[in-house]
Image 1 (cartoon, helix red, strand yellow):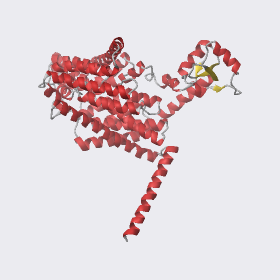
Image 2 (tube, one colour; image 1 turned 180 degrees about the vertical axis):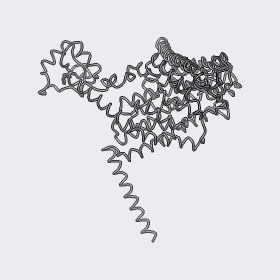
Image 3 (cartoon, one colour; image 1 turned 60 degrees about the horizontal axis):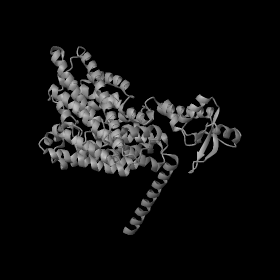
Image 4 (cartoon, helix red, strand yellow; image 1 turned 30 degrees about the vertical axis):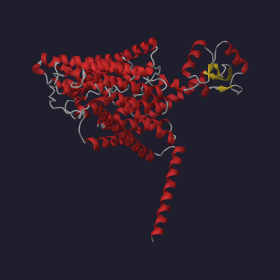
Length: 561
């Protein structure tokens, strides 16, 4: 009886395996169906959730090992008791490791983060760099564990992008599917990292995909819930910050103060972002001027951070303890202002020194400190019509973070989910709206979009600004010799006048020729290794406009589907 049973089980197993292989083959060739897509989204959400969980626990384990503390949430208080040279050695060593890793595994020595994921969603069908992404995740892990003054959401988001990219390549996903899967991975990673399912889903839609298409909503929510469940299985259903004195808002009378707080936070957020770009430019200048190897740059930044940490250990890591103290009102006015300034400087050194990490958690800390300082002043001036100053810390935390991310909706919700207090939403919404409105005019919409603008990737203005850069002249041109193309002689005559473009060039580079020289077409050439040009076709103005129009229509169809 045993032998026939084993034979039947083996046969059934082989049949199931063959059906699975057939299903994978169909998915690669035709793409997943709607039901299959949801299961893939769930699987990606689980993988990204575990990735975010392991990343967070890895930081905690390394911090505990390096600094010798039992509770990393109170790392700053413990670090005050360490010898000064230890606070200096740890970030220098960490920076050196980061520099070597990025030098070996990236082509530019830079850490990949949220901006690269946004670019991947818009311009590369939801794909991101895998090898550089893995190296960046490891570099950010070392940075956050060894004294770097940044946050964990940047590397977690890019890690999620690496996971979705791997899946997209296996199933040969098209552009829409690839972007949706990227959104699922990001939603799960953010949800798992902060125990914030609503904000995780909206962050993926608002920041990464930059649209709220209905076809993407359901799978992204599924993935966000999966990531949250993974977080809660490990940490329980607890909020990131526990507020002991949330206070009460004196409705209507106190709202003008929160409007002013929003404007102050918008300025603070703009200064925070500008300081990072300034530090990056200064770092580039010094590195070029002194011919420093790029692997040494993070170590130098680590030395600077170590010197600051000797006097201000609160800059180490994501700043959980200081943020909690600000939200609890456990800081003096001068201390809150000083801590906010020092944290801004430390964040600029970390990011400008190419050490890795994100800007969200530091923005929460700087915002909470800014809000607390404002609240101490406001409640001191008008104590009879004011709530507690911790309300302002709460609102300031959301206002600065929303302005930096350029995401008022998801940031408002993530602040609620981080604290578990939904009773003072009006104050937070007012402050967030004013800060984002102001800061978006002082930079290119957000920190991430400004980063891309500095790379000449124009996503801030919308699809009409970047779609031309996605279309290649070689893909739109008419081949030489075809009936509807100019003759080789005519094309050569134009090329001899310097009017030609390479097949690999984008339509963004080609369009100025038509506007400047008023010609119906421009020859397209291919250059060999010796630099010799070979005429292969002609790019017509009307064809370029048609291709651009089709791309715009496809983007609009995706965003409204």
